[in-house]
Amino acid sequence: MVKSYFVIGCLLVGVVGAGSWGFVSKKQVSALKAEVRKLYSYRYRSQSQIDLARIEIIPENNPYLEKISEIRRVKKSSPSMDAMWSRLQPMAASYHRYGDRRDLAIGAMLVVAGFYDFGNPAPNDEKVGCVSINQETNFTSIGDLSFEAMTKSDIGCCTDFTLMLASFLDHLDFDTEAVITTGHQAVMVTIDGRGHFLDSNNLLFAQDFFGGNDREMHYFTPYAGTRTPSSQHYVMTSMAFSIEGFGRESWKINSLDKHYRLFDAEFLIDETAAADAIPSAAYDLSARRP
Image 1 (cartoon, rainbow, N blue to C red):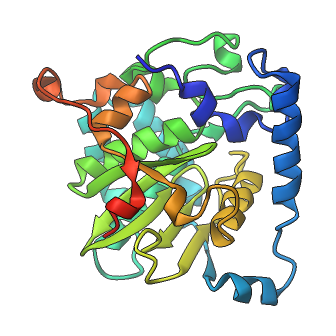
Image 2 (tube, rainbow, N blue to C red; image 1 turned 90 degrees about the vertical axis):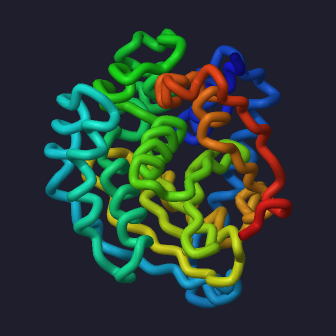
């Protein structure tokens, strides 16, 4: 089993405080911090910067801000994944903007965004904070992920948000794949031949991001207390300006079964099909562009 959970899934949680990672060398820490400083220089300072990026940035209110307690109650009390998604589906379906399937996908993203606080709270916020390892596990890995671990934890990182969103979208019969770039991961849904970017960790929807025909990015108000705003700005800015591996050509695509196996979440694979399923390798976006 590939144990890349910490490297890919948790980089954004721990990058600023990377000196606390025992497995990262001082040279690597220095390089990571230098990259963060460079990325911070791309904060939006004027309308001309946004115009230069040739992407429309659209702020939106999160219609579920008052429902985070209900979302987490359903997450923690459901007896199975299917039961949980069935109970949350009406909430996801209540989002309306486009009048088509994009609304349900965005609604699902916003519901899953309420599942976890992003990383550990202070004073442990410089340490890795994913379902698999966080302050509640005494910073010891729990190993393979399980339904109980994923639904009982209040702490998660992009790996956990992606796994849960991918599962929800699959339950809703979307053409869903996971996408990975350096230090982050999210989901792509293909609707009417257009590949849309969805990120529950950062409450971002980039319309037709992978097709490149519609440069429109929506960012939603994060849930209070979920420690998301700085990460949201980091990812949104990086994508808008195609910085350091966040351009659309830089993302690798995984089938869901491949992604679940890669991040030790095999419980998400249909047990009746698991024995015969053959994971497909991640492949270049240029070969898979809608």
